[in-house]
Image (cartoon, rainbow, N blue to C red; front, side):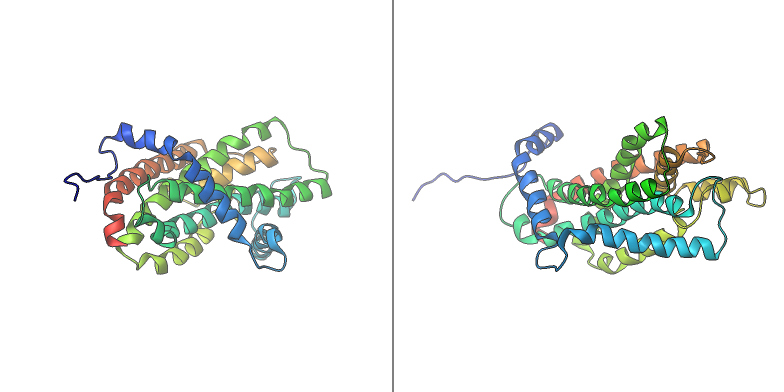
Length: 280
């Protein structure tokens, strides 16, 4: 019997960890591709669900906005106003939900081999990003139908998409780590997503709040603490232009919150990562 044994453990230094992320990039591609293949497996219409789900949400939000008489900038069809907000929100809600549950779904993998666990939620965000790119044809279709031509601001859209990725990744990492230890979060996540939909400017425009003289300034800043406010307002500014404006102080608050969530999410995820295999 050999007196030697091999012990496999993750690097304790952050530098080793981030190098491992690059080293295991093949696993990242595999997990993302696997989730893409099985996402709509054995469904009758397959990838069309990436279009139908946000389309149904767009029509519902359109009706709610019309019913409550939310204002629409001059020359902008209401359906475009809603669509430009629904697509980033749909990306955030799906990536947040699936990232939060990603470690539980892949629990069998976590207990067998070592790899940087950050790969699991990150690959989930990529899959949701592909869904977003597919669903973007809805917006293009509406713009063609209404003959609405965007201006140069459209070039800044990738920056706001990056902000949406940062927001969903940061919050998703934090909740995914909590979800391993406290399974109660699987019941809380749908409520958070549902509540977030109604406090985010999807059916209405942020201009209704920021330009209102009846709403106190501190309430506007509290409203801006929702990081999706900055993302959605940014999308509308890029796509619709015109009278669609960004409340700069509130936008800075939203960006700061998104970046703060990302740092907190990574910090807590790394703190809990070594215990995942034992708890799960």
